[in-house]
Image (tube, rainbow, N blue to C red; front, side, top):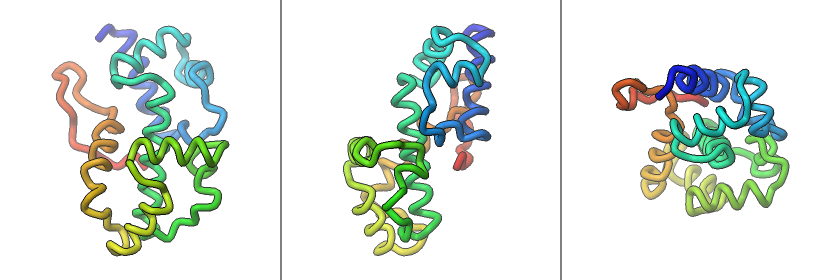
Length: 155
């Protein structure tokens, strides 16, 4: 990883973890490039290289992870109406599609399963998918060694 790319990567991580920019509905590659202080080409290349996915997929993964964390924090009693907006989506259908594609179930179905499993508990059959999201959303890792650091919640 080049030095410039490392700096961009750190700024992206900070923007995602601390500032939660993924909750901004109008967030775009160009908007994030302004926040990070680079151009869209360098930013896009850094995201593709360091996160292993494109900008849109990265943002969707953070938004879906945030939605699941809300379900867990609220024991599955999260109001589904308006959840898309709380997670940074402007469209209910885009939120449902992204959520279902990523987790293989709808937000409503997952909320019901969490309520059934008990407050703060993720149903067994969703644990692997959620852990996968969490591992992907753990951008802070020892870059030089290429090994992930211990996960800390970013939500």
